[in-house]
Amino acid sequence: MTKQQKLWTLLTILSTFLWGVSGLFAKFIFELEPRLTPLLLSQIRMLSGGLVLLALASYKKEAPLALWQNKQSAKTAIAYGLGGIIPVQFCYFMAIKLGDASIATILQFVGPFFIILYLAVFQKQRPRRIELISALVAFLGVALLATHGDMTQLAITPAVLIWGLLSAVGGAANTLIPRSLLQHYSSTAVTGWGLLIAGIGLTVIHPKFESFPLTLELVLLVLAVVVLGTIIPFQLFTNALKYIRPTTASMLDAFEPIAATIGSIIFFGLQLSGADLLGSFLVIIAVLALNWRPRKKKFTNNI
Image 1 (cartoon, rainbow, N blue to C red):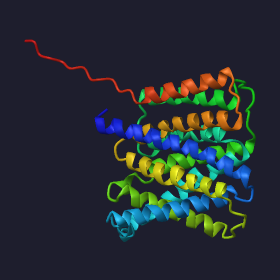
Image 2 (cartoon, rainbow, N blue to C red; image 1 turned 90 degrees about the horizontal axis):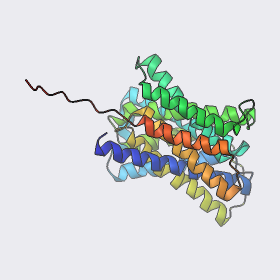
Image 3 (spheres, one colour; image 1 turned 90 degrees about the vertical axis):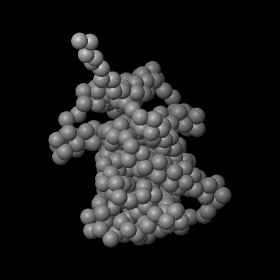
Image 4 (tube, helix red, strand yellow; image 1 turned 180 degrees about the horizontal axis):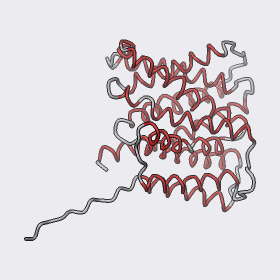
């Protein structure tokens, strides 16, 4: 792994950590103001985040409108917003609303399975042995966390499971779809258009906005979700895809449930069992193992 790859691996970890923290902010919002639904919060997050990033791309003279001059790029951007960002954000918030930030982020973490399957089926890319082993170890860790060690039953409701798995599909799509765009356009513009398209898509589906009283606490929490949980991490994560493998980037999402779990313990009184701690340990080991690549042996001719 080169120094540049190591740097972007660390920045990817930071982005997933911020996503985990944003889930905690969202949970605070849903408890503070029930009328601010996951759908409405997603709309606010996507529309405002997208506009800010596009304005930034324009300020940096990155020609954000150039993407729409190519028909294929335009189609890819629409697919990125509707098929990637909507499920990875809206479905994630639904899982948080019905469950908690820790469970939601853990379920979203199974996204690498969809990535590995997609690469194997559609791009005939055979998974490395270490990827398969890491995925199995991570899955075991996630299973322990989701069941609290009792494999005979889930410690979550079916609704939380469904929304969480849909967010995992979105996480995989969010990793794979924009890669072709990033070869030709700035990551700021790509992420901005993706967020804006997703926000417009949700607004078309549900154009009605509920009114509720604004308090300073609520405004600050929403700003935290938009800035710390959207603009900064999406920009970091999307740009990182230029330098690291999609399976590696997605597996680094392990730091998102870890951050959400720690935050849930501190702020929401979540109690962890021994199985939960073991599951967290397995997830971390899987992430470290995934990034391990054996050095090729050097042969010298002594004749």
